[in-house]
Image 1 (cartoon, one colour):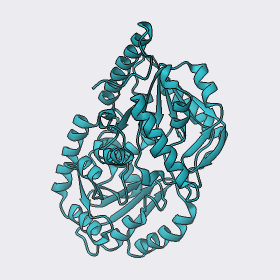
Image 2 (cartoon, one colour):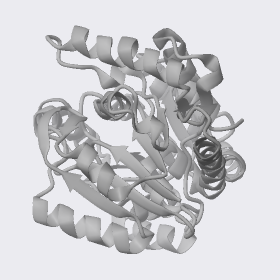
Image 3 (cartoon, rainbow, N blue to C red):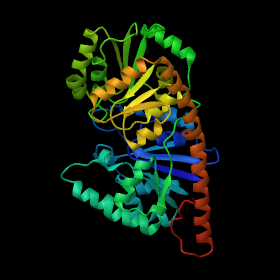
Image 4 (cartoon, rainbow, N blue to C red):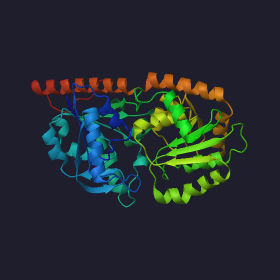
Length: 410
C-alpha cells in the first residue's frame, strides 16, 4: 500500500503526528510526505542545505520519502504547493492523507477528483490556530467551511480528529458525524521513557542537587505559546522549601517576542536568585533527557503535543484548563484556569511542596500514556483501517460499481 501524506509545513526533527506516522509504519507499506520547500515565518528558520540533511536522516531512519515542492504562495502554515498533482501522478498512491481540511491542499485534491482514483482521508485542526490573513478570511472560510465541507459530506471523506474538542469544530463546519473518526495524537514509548542515567548526568551538568527543583518548558517562544506566563508564575512563587530553583527553557524563538516579553521576566528571575538556562530548539529525541531530568513541566498556554512526551517520561505537567488538556492530564498532571496567573502559580507551588504528589502523577502518567497514547498501537490501527478502505475501493472498481472514495470503516 502506498500512503501519501500531504503536510504543507513539515520539519523532520519535530515530534508531530505525521512524523510519527512515518516512524511507526509497517514495512509492508511505502510512505511518502509531500510538503513545501521551506519552513514558516520568523520562528522556525532552516537553511535549505540543513533541511536537506535533516530530510535525508529522517528518510534513512524511517524509510519514508520526503518530497519538497516549490511554494507558489504562503501564509503562516498554509502553502500552495507547486506541482502537487504532477507529484501525485508520479507516486500513484493508494491513499492520500491530507493534513488538514483547513489548509490549502485538500480543496485542490477534491477539485481534481483524486477520491475517485484512490482513498482520500483528512483531519481537522481547530480554526483559531488556523487563523488567516484578515483580508482573505472570508474567501478562506468559504473554501474551507462551505465548498470543501460540502464535498467531504457528499463524497464521504473520513475526517479524523485528534481530541474530542475538535469534534465541536467539525460540527460547526457541518461535517457529517458519521464521517468523524478518532485518531489521537500520541507519543512514542520506545523513545520517551523515564531515563534515570540521563537524569543524573543532565542535572549534574545543570548544577542541580538532589533537593533542587527543575522547572521545564519546551516549545516555541512566541505569542501563541506564551512561555512568559510560566516565567511570571515562577517569579511570583515567593519562599519555598527547596534549596534552589532552576528554570530550564528549550525551543525556537521569535526574536521580537523573546526580547521584548520574555527577557525582562527572565532577568527578574535571575535577580531573585533563580538559575535560568535557555536553549534553542533541540532534536525531539533528545527531549527525553530533559523530561527525565526535570521535576515539573509547565506548558502555560494552549495545547501542545509535548505534554504527552513529557508524561511518558514520568514528568508531572501543568497546563491551562480546557477539554483536551483535562483529558490528557487526567492522571498525570494538573490544570489551571486559563488567564489566571495566580492559579498557575498555585499549581506550581502545589507540586513543589508535595514531592509525593509529583511521584504519583509521574507514575500514573506513564501508565496512562502506555494505555491510551502509544503511537505503535495507534498507527497499526490506522493502517489496518486504510487497508480495508483500499480493498473496498478496489472491489467497487473491479465489479463495475460506482467508483468513489471508500470511507474508513468503523
